[in-house]
Length: 235
Image 1: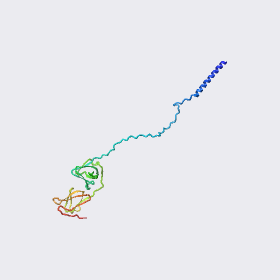
Image 2: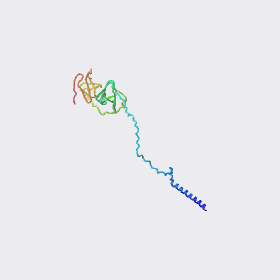
Image 3: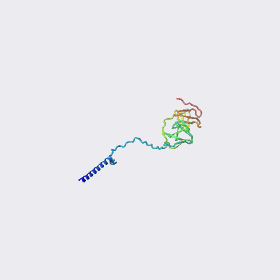
Image 4: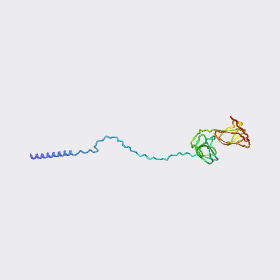
């Protein structure tokens, strides 16, 4: 009985040693770190705005050439003689300049009620008006392509009166002016300009007067071709 007892004790002792060894290994070995797949899912949170503002470089500016308005080229040339430049669009305005034969000027504007064009007076900082219907003007370009307006500065009428007993013939214009017997027809309005007066009642048509008249003036013819002098009644 002694031998089996001893064998049992040996087995018991070996079993106890083996159990102690396993326990020691369990305590000394740290638990394995969880893998990524086994890690708990975190609750999703909105992305945070960056604290620093990123400054973007400005896009390069493309410099385009500044468009320039192209004005229609409209000119007037004096032909067959000199052309009067008047202060308004009409023959009733004073002449304030001359466009000499062969000279050309740029048209600035046009009068919408008549065929008159505004131009720069040569060698001057002022402007004036010329007719495009006279034989002394030649228009190049489309007059309707320039700005148009209506003037509000009306002319001041000028008057010519015949105080003699003879009929008078006025040039230029081929105007027949009755004698003083035909009051009030012996007085007419006349455009500013340079004129010559001839005695129509004499066969030789002698010249009796040469005069220049301006806006607002009144000129009287007091001598006829025979030398007779008469004054016009006043009032």
